Image 1 (cartoon, rainbow, N blue to C red):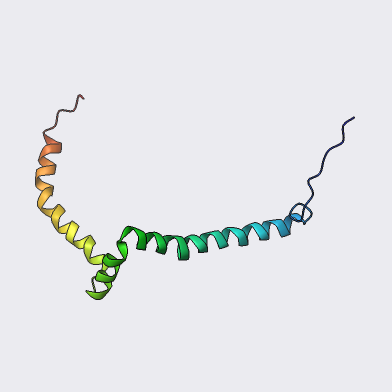
Image 2 (tube, rainbow, N blue to C red; image 1 turned 45 degrees about the vertical axis):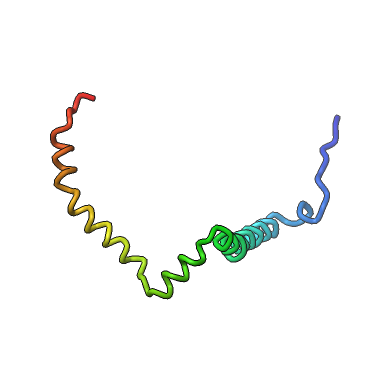
Length: 91
């Protein structure tokens, strides 16, 4: 009969509940590092920082962009509706 090897180490010697909490905190730490270190560095490296600063300086509201596109759709809607009404249905 073969013996079962139990992994040794700090993590595997802990109770299950402790390992779950440790995994939660490690996951939150990874998310924090990505959000507050990696993404800002990537933004600087790709040149998005200037665009972000311009949006902040010009006091542009991000929600206003939605209404710009809604206004454009109003002009396109009749043509789209005609296209959908007169498109052959057997394709």
